[in-house]
Amino acid sequence: MTATPADTDTRIDGPLLRLMLVMLLGGVMGFLDTTIVNVGIDTLGAHFDTSLGTIEWVATGYLLAVAVTVPVSGWAAERFGGKTVWLVGLTVFLLGSALAAVAWDPASLIAFRVVQGIGVGALEPTLLTMLARAAGPARAGKMIGIVGAVVTLGPILGPVLGGVLIEHASWRWMFLINLPIGAVALFLAYRQIPADPPREGDPPPLDTRGIALLCPGFAAVVYGLSQAAGDDGFTAVHVILALVAGAALILGYVAHALRTTTAPLVDVRLFANRTFASGIGAVFLTGFLLFSLLFLIPLYYQLARDRGVMAAGLLLVPQGVGVWVAMPIAGQLFDKIGARAVIPFGGVLAALGILGFSTASGGTASWLLITYSVLTGLGMGAVGAPAMSSVFGSVAPESIPSATAAVYLSNQIGGAFGIAIAALVLQNRFEAHSVVAAFQGTFAYLIAVAAAVGVLGLVLRKPPRADAKADAAALDPGPEAASEAVSEAASEPASEAATVEQPAGRPA
Image (cartoon, rainbow, N blue to C red; front, top):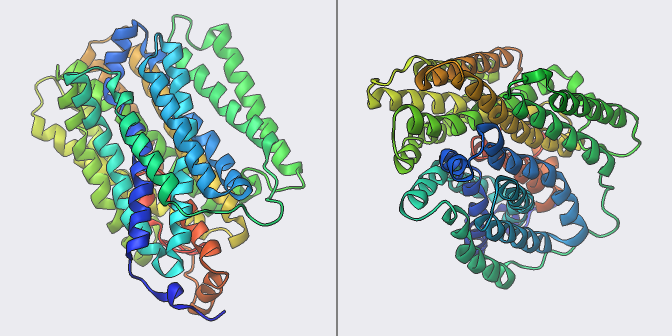
């Protein structure tokens, strides 16, 4: 295929820039809402007079809902068109925001956060897919870099915005603020986003049975873990039932994926590849580490350091800055020396930062705590992108959709597990230790998680870079094929998003 000027022009022109701004206006709310509630966990628990194990589902339920919806949204975009999915996703997110703002008890708030998550699960992959298609292969990398830089600000600014709103208004404004912004974003999207017709012919079948087995299975396991903080712990009947049911559903999915004659949600056969399996493990543990720290650190500053919610949100910024700084550097180092050196080094940095928190007392200087946060952020930024790039580089182009689902599910579900287990450990330690000692012990177990990430990095291999002829072949089908793989990979949460800038089958 002969390249057209549109295929080779690398400029971000006016129409593409306007499309980026319109879609980012809607999409950035979802990225903010991933972390905006973390700084308000203590406030929400006090307002509803409920346990940490219950209120943490405000964050956990959101992550699980996003994870469930992402694979469905890709199918829906082919069936109904990307613009339709975007408008519906944004509408659902705004509906969830309005309902969450008037929640009357923990159950209603958790349910409405799930509605928000369903909307965001439709927005995140559609944002990158539509922009990558509009950009074409020549501009896809530059576009993903710009969008990734904006997306990365979500976890940084979310807690800050949440702290400001809680301290100067009410926790309900964490959700109400989405409504005026979202209304403008919805109007502009309807007017400015070009029509994106459904794919010609029948789309690939959606693995509904796989979704019905895998996602509730993980949700049941996370629920069991979150409920094990009671007096009976893991011996409670409802905890045992949840864990057993979850394990049975997950095993049922494995059996289904091995037997099905159509494409499964995640092809479990890919896990026979050591690099793929280790990379997915590293992505899972990175999500586990990132979201558990985003959950714990604001609580630590509020309960152990007696800081207000706004200060707690601001004190999360150093960690986010560390992630933001490390990502592009890690991507370049991965290209040169591979994941075996980069990921273990990132694991060591993260472990050192967490070690600092695990030994901090009530009198530890604030500048030291900020240093620990920066170290932790640098470590996680150095791990996430190389791990994900290793996953995509280890599979054939036809396996990219399954690898994308595996990456996204592992990161989001890893985050849900991280929050649930962090809440479980912290709540159990509160019963027998001082507040400071409870946090010290909870941070201490995360050192082992960071170390495990580093160990997984040691078994990763750097995939061979495709030659120019192979690159041209990958781009030849046109903007849709190349940019879909780029955008799907880049829909990974903010800690990894900005560095995946290459077409399917190539390492970042």
